[in-house]
Length: 211
Image 1 (spheres, rainbow, N blue to C red):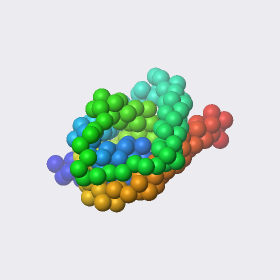
Image 2 (image 1 turned 90 degrees about the vertical axis):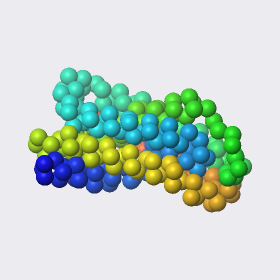
Image 3 (image 1 turned 90 degrees about the horizontal axis):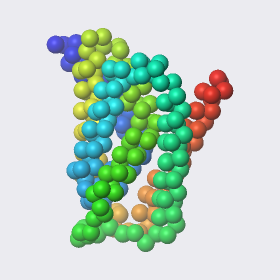
Image 4 (image 1 turned 120 degrees about the vertical axis):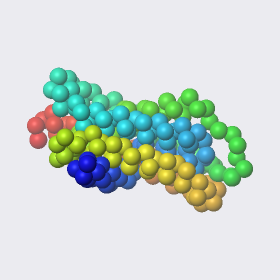
């Protein structure tokens, strides 16, 4: 029992460290939380997605990588293209400006569109696979026989973070009542997405050339 508790605790701490870095998921959850649009559905989708990916990492990624060696390059290309497009979208929003947030706003975007964007930012983003499947999967091997407990701890950290970010974002509502704040947020999101895409493309090129 103590071994499993130690593994779960380690999974929680390590999972927290990975999820704290700003990324496509986090930026989208923050934006939805600020706008108070489908917060529960978005947070739940992110948490469940991470849980599935973590379960994959601690159970069978090594076998899958051996059987399907072309999966990683495909995710690099698709994910980079999506991140570049998503960055362009927010860069245009930053240039246009004019967005504000009022506590009285009640008009929300469609749930279907929000979920599709959320799923795309999660499942088409190779960085998510790097953190959840590869890194957490590899670290879980430090706890032989307790890999599942490690994964549960990491999944709990992910769920706690997403719900805290989604519902805690409303505390920033007064700040984002100003159009300039939205422009800065959109610009930060755009630069973050482009930075992630550049890292993915450079990393893929290094792997392809054997550097």
